[in-house]
Image (spheres, rainbow, N blue to C red):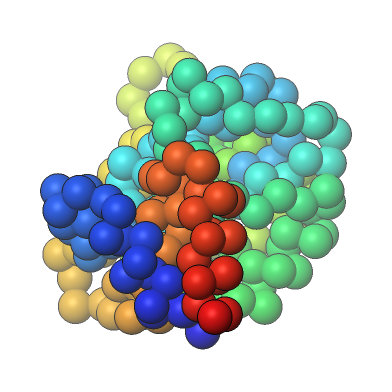
Length: 220
């Protein structure tokens, strides 16, 4: 449960414009779709996908780091790491298991399957959208366990797009369609409170000192 008094205490430190911006952004955030990226070697691509998640209102990003260690490229992420929830996994199986337990269908994005073109994709079910590298694509394990395959229609000689470009195209299309639908896609009230608290903490310098002061006063 969120400590409402603590939330209000922190939000009183923020400007009114900042608080209003949080509420406006949160009204467009969703967990109906989540994104998973698998062993993306180029750090800037991971950061760029995170930025696309933030821009198009996808609250959660899952990063599989089975082969390569990573760190977020803050210059490309442009602060998106403060607003998007990132979960890392050291195995494909761990990521798949976690997302399935949360009720997501596994959707592999690939130019090599003709199961469903982007404009025909059914947005009704909560979906985890998996992206692989341009060179290698997704692993056989993900392709085997996928509930469906999603393809961006292309009419040129090139058969694939960079992961960051693919993610941006797909997330823009699906998030726009989702907001125009009657699907219950918004965050819950509890989730909104959790994000308000997390974002307030991310916005305040020397938050540890302020937090200690608050709880010291509250204990008196």
